[in-house]
Image 1 (cartoon, helix red, strand yellow):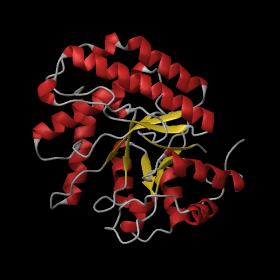
Image 2 (cartoon, helix red, strand yellow; image 1 turned 135 degrees about the vertical axis):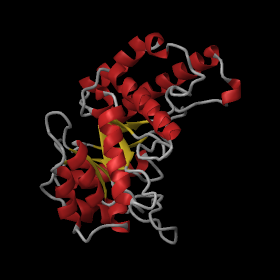
Image 3 (tube, helix red, strand yellow; image 1 turned 120 degrees about the vertical axis):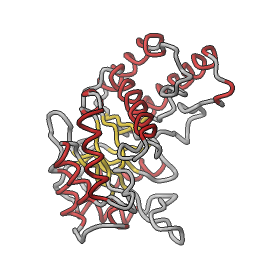
Length: 299
């Protein structure tokens, strides 16, 4: 088991997701920004290794406007060696990496332009992982999309786009996550049947909308969709409900007893856990201690 957090380190004085306004775009501005982002990413990775946080989600903003038509610069070639060195560091420290495109990536949209833009974004993010030389256990995590008044048709449309429009390099990394409103674990399992994509399990989303599966059983069902050799072990997102907030809103700080209970409930099941909790590495470090106390980590 590896434990981590997404994108932003609150302790360090840098960000790997610097960007700028589209109106300010220039190749010089792009190169300068990406240099800063990748330098900060290295610092974040080093912090994580030092503290035993071996699962990390890269920001979608490493290369601003990478999937936008305005960006015609060959950033892949320019930063090839930097990406390769980052990948070597990741691999030598046995880290697991993922990316999670923003909500505008919707493969089953009825709008062709949205689908085209979604694919372009997935190609960009997959290229980042490819340039790092990471194997296909480094994943691109997306949601099922919309239901558009006919969820069975939307699921079929997703599968059609997957099979007919996605490059093989993207399909090799793609996985789908249950969400908190529309796509339950069962819906994602149907997408797995249609496409072969593994299912990322989100415990808070499962608490928000489900088909009655107990938590341990739900984790097992998601885990069964992962091929250990090509996909790695189950990736899951963990959070808990923010008190007094809208359903599905992530808590600010980890509730250690709740995490302990989840760890105890899933004892014996192997997974890598991404903590979607607002204070990032602070909660991840606490989660690490809980997991160690329950002998869930190899130390």
